[in-house]
Length: 315
Image (cartoon, rainbow, N blue to C red; front, side):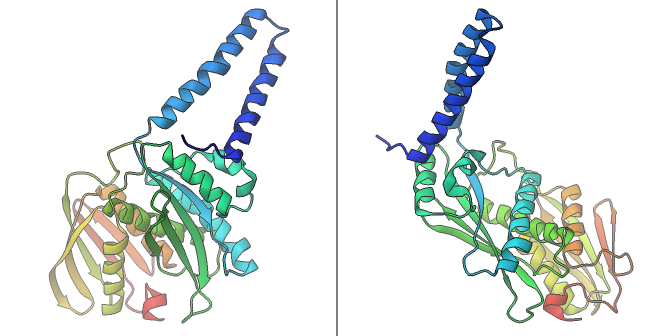
């Protein structure tokens, strides 16, 4: 028999007390409504327990990891990055776990404690699917201290093993919400790709937004020096879900190349990811990088005097 965790039991008492209060409030109006409320109090929890235990997909919970981080990073970046990551994952149809755990006192700091770990494992044991904890952290870049590198660690609660550690390109200053949102979008793409490759199904819908029939598109890079080209292609390969392959078709000169890109993602989603990738590197202005899409052709035109991936290729 599974040991019931005191924090979950406390939560259930709160819910039951709340329902009892509702019954007392409605009783004076009509005895019929009171009877209906009582029936609802018994039937609704039963339906909830059934649906919760009927879940046959894997779930995730996003928490913050403040260990070894400065007060500045905790307040200005990690909290915002965590919130933005949840939204970015939802955009990929990956939703985080039922917020019941956030009601526990153990989750007041949004960090994992030993009691919380026990509660999470108990919850996971009652599910058909697996439970994954995604811990969000950030650190100043060693080589370029003015930049912040976002990082997540993904742990399988059932096995206790680390599934993946994911980082992406540094967040560029100023560390405002648009730049943090861009970093979170990159993390979400990488997380989705890693979990898919590891065999996890994180969502009620079996059909992934990138799990379509494979398609081929042509990506033309104009004005991209070798470093920027390599950084862009590496990011696409490592972060874009549904990636199948990239093949060089021709490169008539050092700053111009055309690649054949195979993916199971839709062209609309690919366009959005490329736009976010441009934004992540601070290239919002049209005089830096322009994206043109026509049919199966993607054309990225960059000002040769600028550098897209400054953290990797310099100014």
